[in-house]
View 1 (cartoon, rainbow, N blue to C red):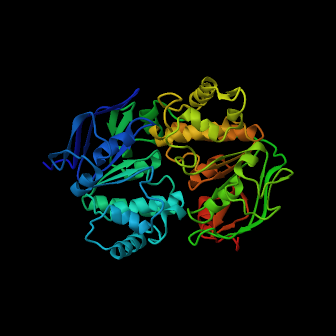
View 2: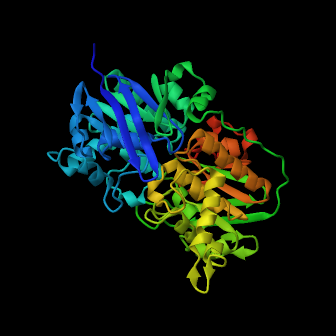
View 3: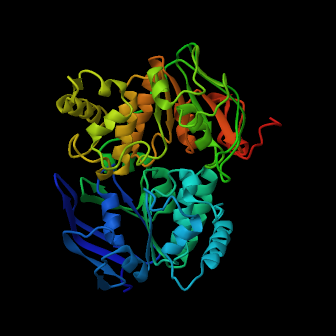
Length: 504
């Protein structure tokens, strides 16, 4: 008999107030693509980090290729033949793509050789990236490509992928699947975490289901439906979204002829952007990462105040030069694509993170006589956690201690709970399980029905088609005309992502 590539026995890991993994058993065979499925906070990412040596288990045993392995750190994991693509990227912002990749590779290679290898691998797999670009200039989709290429360059025997397609376009996902199937045919084993059930059914030939840190089932995804996989994962099927017909109101956001030169050499120039979002509608912006989404969102949120006078208005107010705080006072609330660092301060608690964007959190009743009322702040955070099903060890839990999906739910919930008149959200369900994704999308539609103007920027077309009334596509810093979602097709939007809307 062939020895399993990976065999876990009795893996247990506990943190204060929560058991992340409890007596987990998992077997992965050579050449097998094995899905690990579970809702946010089920213990998937913790288990993967244990295999990769980033976290030490409290109990249990890891065997690799039939031999007991004590993986003490990622360097030892890579020496065994284990590579991992993290959901939260493990990249240094201040150095280049090539330098980041070089850190995890054999130092017998020169930096120029690594840069050349990155370009070759990127061209081979259709994951376009410039090895000389500093990481801080990349969008999240581009960072995802860097992580994937870095893992592929190690020629792994076991490749761990934690939400690898969450910010990739459908075309990039198709190319990645070709790569993964080729790797599996060559004997590489793949551990695949995703909340996209159709991906798991299309790619994986085995699946282990976690719920509350425990294994609750093992199946072949090809024999299951999306509905049955949902029931295995969350105990039920996600609720159906309800689209109510509503007359739109006045324009809450107008962008007229917005042109902005890039702030750095690797950015994208915005060219003649025209955009309007009215009360009672959801407008979506689709596009391949790195085509101006970041620059446009910075201009709309107020992080970039260089917009010409009159080019960005909210109602009757010219907000082109206003900073984020001033725009929030006018009713704009914003969810950035980067959860940790921009959406939340990693070391602050959830309650303290409310102080970042909630105007009422820095006024009465949270301040009394100049003193912060921690009880009122905790109560507000707890209410958001309960409303959006955030799993954490209370309002005092540090933002960085939450799983990616649970932190996303809290950040989105924090801004929705503020009852904005204009809501801008980037990648609203990145790394969120199917049940929570349905909840967030339902909350977006509820905002719309309450008269809020909503702008959604996402690289997931299915999501945009599900929640938006109208769609734009951004390509090379230009914005397409809008098209009613009911009249658009995935093929049409895919073509427009290359900038081919002029003829249409």
